[in-house]
Length: 330
Figure 1 (cartoon, helix red, strand yellow):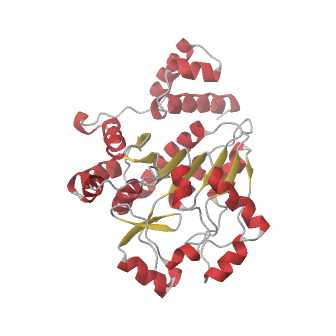
Figure 2 (cartoon, helix red, strand yellow; figure 1 turned 60 degrees about the horizontal axis):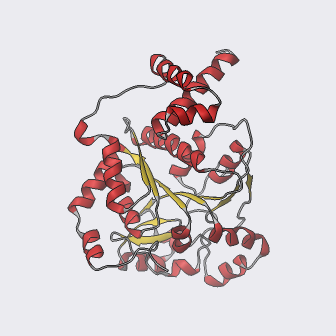
Figure 3 (tube, rainbow, N blue to C red; figure 1 turned 180 degrees about the vertical axis):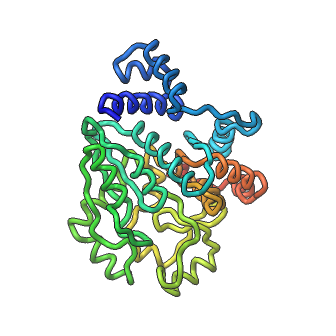
């Protein structure tokens, strides 16, 4: 494919994502790209004709937009972005990653502070980023230290920063230490504090939602027993929570180097990315914590989360009791 053909196809992809995934109007797209509205209309038609965009017919009773709107309204979110579900969890995760990358790009403005998590979902987001022709003047930091598992590739925050020409600052410390004393000594270091101090002032945060993947070897017997005793079903950036959206207090808190849930709750744009059948209950619990403003997932997962919410009265009981979420806290 010649360079001009690649550029033309890239333009079709960009216009299509702005219109179909982010919901921008043709007038907004025209203004952003410096073209007129009829040109945008022609590009959208060309995208459909050349297979860049495929139109699917779905049951009108379970349209992705309806599912997203229902979840948004149920949990008081700013938005729920729903990608099509594909033939496997891995392909679906990649598709969700592309959608999440578009959501993140739409959230970026010059001068913003951005925090990014790690894990499979965030790796898919980083995979979807392509080099930006113009640097974007944002500062990106990781949301915690070394994560639950190892990786042979660069962390998502660093890969995304390199793709868009942003500045980044790494956190050269493990995410989970053996004891509180070692953790306290590390977080007192100026190089570590340069990152951790920024967590309270972020404009955008994007992160995955973890399922119950911890083990005796990863967290130690004391924390493992505590997590079991308190009924933890998932975690966000090493902060475990229960099915009813309550963050649990365990010895992990004194050993972890990670952003606190209260900081995520005060971040203007707090974007969670997760998909797959194993994530249904963790997503539901995470939504009930009140720290999320935007959820990016797929149609099949969103439908299962909504169904579980309708069948499970834990959240309704919590609401009836008047329990405030972290975002309601003073």
